[in-house]
Image (tube, rainbow, N blue to C red; front, side, top):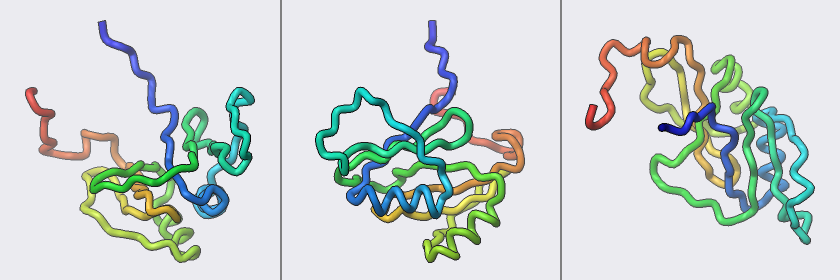
Length: 140
């Protein structure tokens, strides 16, 4: 019997400066800050995680620690309007890195203040219907 997965609930992002990172996720990306559990014991309030809502059931959790960067490591955020996302990030002086497109979507990479890679994408056609020749998973 397989485990029935229902979605990705949250992604934890390590940040070195929670105030700076919180401002980026709240003020630049426009995410809604939400409360954190009362059961979390953080004697130093500056080390307390910050949680942000994305859509009705998904979240990003900022945790104080040393960010770890490696090629390919990223979190993808889906947006309703990729052109508006580009405009807002550009207005805030946030660099945009172009990447190869995926059929049925538009996307680019950017980085938060700690250098964590964020993929910003808008799907226009459900995957994999948009790709005439998708590559099957290994062993299939």
